[in-house]
Amino acid sequence: MGAYLDAALIPVGQALLSGVLVGGVYGLMSIGFSLAFGVMRIVNFAHGDLVMYGMYVGVIASTAFGVDPLYAIPLSFLLMALLGAAQYQLVFKRFVGAATLQQLLAAIGLGLVLQMIAQVVFGADARSAPSMFGGQFVLLGPLFASAAQIVAFIVAVLCTIAVEALLLGTRWGKSVRAVADDIEAAELVGLSAQTINITAFALACGLAGIAGTIMVTYYPVDPSKGLSLMPIAIIATTIGGLGSIRGSFFGGLFCGVVQQLTAMLWNSALQDVPLYVLLLVFIAYKPTGMFGFRTE
Amino acid sequence: MSLLAVEGLSVAYGDVLAVRDVSFAFEEGEVFVLLGANGAGKTSILRCISGMVPARGGAVTSGGRRLNGLRPHQVARAGISHVPEGRRIFPNLTVEENLAVSFIGARAHDNAAGALAAVYEFFPRLAERRRQFGGTLSGGEQQMRASGRAIMNVPKLLMLDEPSLGLSPVMSELVFERLAAIRAQNTTILLVEQNATCLELATRGVILQNGRVLLSGEREALQDSEFVRRAYLGV
Ligand SMILES: Nc1ncnc2c1ncn2[C@@H]1O[C@H](COP(=O)(O)OP(=O)(O)OP(=O)(O)O)[C@@H](O)[C@H]1O
Ligand SMILES: [Mg+2]
Image 1 (cartoon, rainbow over the protein chains, first blue to last red):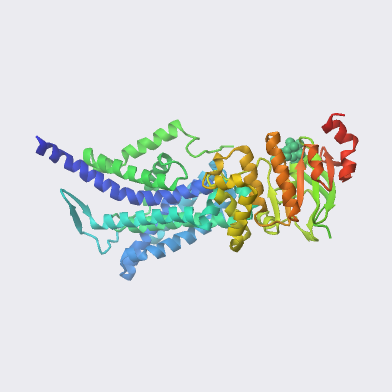
Image 2: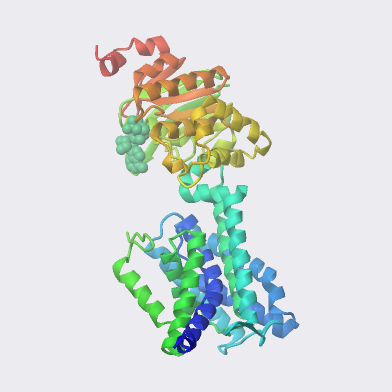
C-alpha cells in the first residue's frame, strides 16, 4: 500500500521539483516586470521581448562565438539594460506615474516592433543554446533534475537576492523606494527622479536579459517566445503583490509549479492553459485594479 | 541681494489664476510668513519656488540667482528645503531611511551620521521610532520627521507649508518651539500658515487674499492689521 502511494507520489514530486526549477527563472523574469511597475507604474508589455532577446544573446554567444551561454550573462544584462534605458527615454518617460491605456498600447506596440526585428534578424525557427551542463541530469533520491535547470535556478535566486539587497541596503535602492513612494516628495529632498527612474528601468530590463540567457540553456527560443511568457510575468506579479520583488519571485515559482503539474496530470501541450485561465479571471474580476489602469 | 526675492509672480492652473502678481523679499536670518485663508495661493507660491509648477509670469531669485526653470531636485540642492503641505512621508521607508534620503539627494554623505544624531537630539521621539516604517507614524511624529528631514542638511532656506495643520495645540506648540530653535541656529525660514499666532515667530510677512498681496510689512504691522484682527483673532 505504502509502496503504491510512493509510486503515485513520485510523479507529483517530480512535477513540483521541475516546477520550482523553471519557476525560479520565471521569478527572475517577473521581478523585472514588477520593478518597472512598482517604481514607475509602467506596465511593460514588452518585458517578455527583452527576455526573448536575452535568449538570442545566449544563442549567438554559443553558435557564432562558441562561448558557453552562461558566460554571456553579464553581456546580456548590459545589452538589455541599455536597450531598456533607450526604451524608457523614447517611449515610457512620458507615462511615468500613471499606468494609462495609452501606456499599455505603447508597450504592446514596442513589443511588436521588437518581435519583427527579431524575426528579420534571427528568422522564425526555434533555436537553442545548451550550456556546458546541457544533457546532464542529477538524481535526487527517486527524482531527477536537469543540471542546466538547476544552474539556471541558482542564478535566478542569486540575482533575486542581489536585487533585494540593492533595494534595501544601498543609497540607490533607498532613492528608488523613495521615488516609488512619492515622486514629488523625492524631488523635494533633492533626488533626481529621472535619473533614478531610468536606472531602475534599465535594471528591470537587464534582469529580463539574464532570465532569457539562462532560460535558453534548456528551452528553445523563437521571436514569439517573449509574448508567450508575458502571461506568466503578469500572473506572478499580480499574485505576488504588485511591486513586491520577493512576492513576484514566489509568484514565478507558483506559475512554474502550476505549469508542470498540468503537464504531468493532463498534457504538456496544454501546460499553460491554467495560467491563461488565471489571467482571464484576473482580467474579468480586477480589470482596473490589477494595474490601477486609468483609462481617461 | 535678498536671500529670496519673488517679483511679480503669477501662477496659473489652466485658466485659473491662483497667484497674481505677488512680490516679496526677505534677507538671511529672517522668519518670513505667508498668511492667508484657504485657497489664497500660499501653497502655489511655495510649489512655484520649488519648481513643481511653472510661473505664468514674474521671477523667483535667490541671492540673485534665478530659480525659475530649475527642476525641484535642483532647487533642493541649491539649499532650499521645502516641507510640503500634508507632510508627505515615504510610507515604505523606515524613519531613519526617511531622514537619510535627504543626504543622498544633497550628496552630503559625509555629514550623515552627525546630522542624524542632531535631528534625533532635536526630536527624541524620532530616535525611538527609527526602525519603524514612515507610514506608521502619527501625524505629529510625521511632522517632526518632515521638519527633521528638512533641516538635516542645514538648508539656506527652510520652507514649511502649514506645519501645524492637523496637530493638537500641544503638538503644534512643540513644532513651533522647534522652529524657534531651528531659527536660532541661523536658518532662514519661509513659513506658510493660516493661523496668525505664528506671527509671534515672524520678522516680517505678507497677507494673501485670492492670490494677491493684501498687506505686507513687519510683524507688528501685520498683527495690528484689521485683517488679522478680524479674521484670526475674532476682535
Ligand atoms: N493642481 C491644481 N489644479 C487646479 N487648481 C488648483 C491646483 N492647485 C491649487 N489650485 C487652486 O489654486 C488656488 C490656490 O490654491 P493653493 O493650494 O495655493 O491655496 P492655499 O493658500 O495653499 O490654500 P490652503 O490653505 O487651503 O492650503 C485655489 O483656488 C485652488 O483651488
Ligand atoms: Mg495650502
